[in-house]
Image (cartoon, rainbow, N blue to C red; front, side):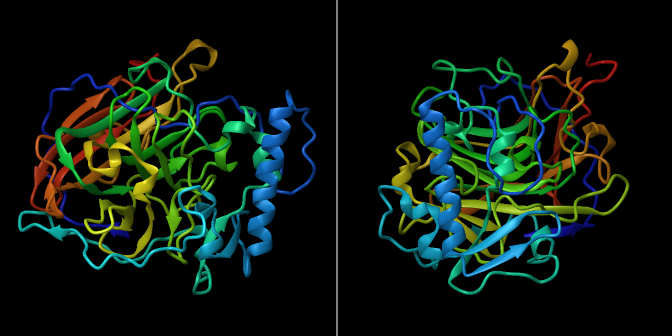
Length: 428
């Protein structure tokens, strides 16, 4: 669900103790070169190994398979190509545990809203650039953003891990050792069966193609070693992955701490899309403006108590699809942590902190119409109830670069403002 947010302003933010947190890096942290056009010419770079060539051919074959299966192709004004592919032929069903299957019916039971939850505002509309002119895919198909030749040329990491995050470095990893910086709210120490929040969308400025800025929900289970399971969704600006600086709707999953499983969006088999009007990886348009109109999206991730799959829903509106329970070990049961907030990659260009923005690029103290926010931060309990996220803890790795401040009121429930400009006189 997306909305133009114009509800009551929350009370002044209440300062909270920032706690150290071991968090998951949510990034495609690899170096990148400038991309060419969006054409489908021949890749000219030399492959470093036979494995790289095989990976390249596999990606091209998957691209061609989607193109051939498409019953309609939509050329977006922003340059994206959207293929409308029969739902049973989408990449999910190449997964060994899903072969031969078709998308399951939508669950009859949705999470129940508790009496003390804040009222949700907004329209059941999710604005994306490719559908601005009223475009959508026919019934029985799902929209898939095409990976182009220029996407592959722009990517200078190993093509064997195209669309994946970097492998975990060691059993535990702190949130800044690999250049990833966070400003997040989180709950832990309980059994969680989902999470929900509304977050405003910004065209965050990213300083280089090797960096990114994102805002998302993480649903997490396992340890921060090799058995970590995560489900993730939100918006991100990633010039390397998408070739531009537009905020884009994204998903991610892993069942082994980013070692060999999972990917962004539909770059691999796993996530099953059921919605014909939402393109994962496509630009969200319009976005919020400083001192102007605010646009937010409401995301709900929850575990179907009957079949055990984790569904992605746009607020109280349409379902996007689901992560089958068979993909996971720990998340086959429940989550033990839920996290909300922002993340950037800091490559320290020229030896200084990056000027890549988190959220709006402005600090939380500037408040509504200026700073990025999460509002109506909620979790799903064992009985499929949506409840306010009690004991929400806030942490910023480097508050002088990217901050976070939160509070509670009846209009927004649990909320926080977060983000910042990166490099500044207090963050050299």
